[in-house]
Length: 500
Image (cartoon, rainbow, N blue to C red; front, side, top):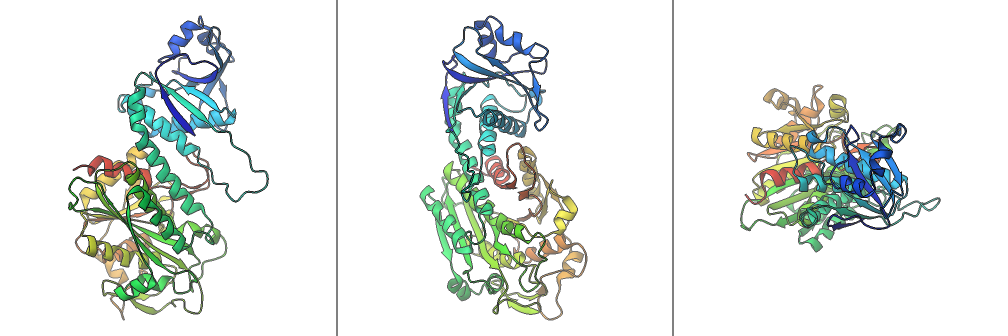
């Protein structure tokens, strides 16, 4: 999709998109076009049969063919609700719906006139930018492995006509950066596990060096020397080498300012190990590296838009497989922190990966705070379904900031408690701790486990098991990987930490 930005004009020989309110009153430059057409446009949209409602969509539109006195072959008039109350997410959804309309009619050259859609909470520049972002996110498609009946997509060129076109264009790189980060995450999570192995994920992380990210990848030899017995234990049954990828972006004017850190669980495929998962649904376990995918995509977004902040991204990359070297239930492993862990269930593996990744991050980089993301527990899906991700934290300020960013982007978080009585549930009779709790609150005891590896560093854990993948088509996301967390954390960084 190619975007261009133009000053207001009745452009020749193209398809146009304009907007009207719920009472069919044309907005912005559409009023001028209506005058030029001698009220042809308003006459059509006020006819009884002009607006169509497609049952699968949540928007109305009318089509004006060859409007009088305009060298426009077709004009789509998009009807809005109460746009004065639109949020950032509403504008993204509008952009997704616009793309749906354009692609349904297989248009390849479109001019959009967005001026006049004024919200009390979102600036004119940001409203148009979010419309563009929504359309970019909605255009995502993963069909690289299709060889039969693969549709050839037309190259879509979109011109944005606006009185503030130059300012919108200046903001376009930041919009594109978010879209590119989300797309990278979706690609990583969607790729089949025989392709997206731990070394391949690390290679993708390393590719960010072309954007100015400094990347270091540790293999099993280096991690063994460091004593990362917890992380390494998870991948012992796999033919693919486990990796730890560290991505460093230095964008703050003070290069020595404490970084902020994001840590991701990257289990490229999770069989459950010796504690084997049931066959039903196991094919979805390729998305168990969703947390790592988000961190890599986020780092791409921050680097592409040259975020004024110092950031560390760390992803622990393993495949949890069965084999003659696989970790057994009741094995005891020693983590990088020196704490010992009795592994009672090899399907509670993500926390073993994060234990070493978190401790390494706080020890080596002394970050201002750490946020980790993981498709960690099925229990969080039982609690929250697919609407919210679970939030666990040792810091109220950090929690509130994450929750607020999540509300803005409609990537919502729900905070759960941490408490010493929950922490007791992971005490082991023969080691410092065990990797599963003795009671029912599985998401909480998993978070308590992680907390033992952060020391006093402000920290938040996002359990995204219910939100990283969708079986439903959404306005800005197809079925499959959602990249939940990339927009949230980009917004979080920009709102609270960039340049400060």
